[in-house]
Length: 83
Image (cartoon, rainbow, N blue to C red; front, side, top):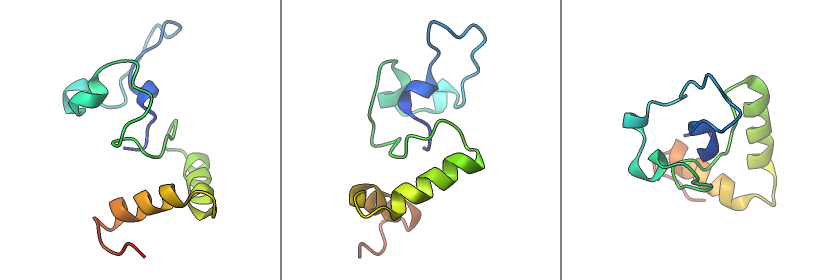
């Protein structure tokens, strides 16, 4: 999943919230409000716009973000090459 866990639930300021992913399709870990980190949401994107994807690409290419790159490769290649 690309969203941040807090984007999956409404906050107090939002009057007309539309769930980006229906609650019944979320893993039980993400169904509860207040989750900050999850293995199901490693990228932390607010939306799926081009700018968000470019930002993710830059983060993956950054040498300091090796863990993120390793997760991306694992998920993209379904556990294939770890090199």
